[in-house]
Length: 247
Image (cartoon, helix red, strand yellow):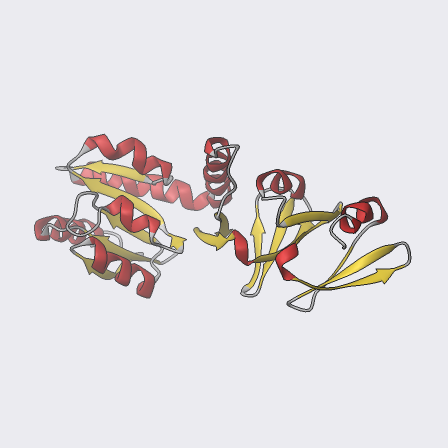
C-alpha cells in the first residue's frame, strides 16, 4: 500500500537524512516538505498526507501547534532533538518518537511500528478517542470530536452535527458535509454533548435543536424535520422531553 509522506523540519540535513532513509521504502512517497510551522500547515492541508514526519521545535509554530490547526490528523512520526516533548507527542497518538540523532536501525523500528498501526487502524482510533474522553473536563463539552476516516482522524465540529443515529454498536453523525461514523454508542455520546443543544428523541436518535426546521404531530408524538431534509422520529417515551421545549 502506497502512503503519501510529508516531511516537516527546519534543519535541511535532517530532511535530507529522512529522504535518504525513505529511499529504501518505495511504498512511502514524499509529496511535500516544509521548514517551518506556518508553511507546514499549508503543505499538509494541500497534500493530505497519510504519514507526517514532524519536528517539534521550529520557527513560527511548533510541531505540536501545527497539529492543532489541522482538520485531519495523519499518522505522525515525530523527529526531534528534545525528549521533553515525548509525552505530549503521544497525546496525539504518534506512531513513534525519533530522538535526534537517530540511526537507520532506529528509523526502521519506527517503520515497523507504522506497519503495525496500519494493520489495526480502528484499534488506534478507539485508544485515542477513549483517552480524549477520559481526560475531558466533566464541566465542559467538546467543540470538536475526532472520527475515523480510513487511516486518518477527521475533526468534526460538534456545532455542525444535525443529528445522530445509532449504527449498531457505533453512531452515525449527520452533518451538511456528510455522514461520519463514531466509535461510540449513542448512549455514550449523549453524556458527552451539551444537553442545551442535543436532545435524545429516540433510543436510536439524538437531534441538535439548532437544526430543527419543523415539528409535525404524528399521533401521540412528533416527527422532527431537520434542515438537511431528514425526518427523525420522536418515540412516545421521549415525547415528553420535546413537549418541554414547546411554548
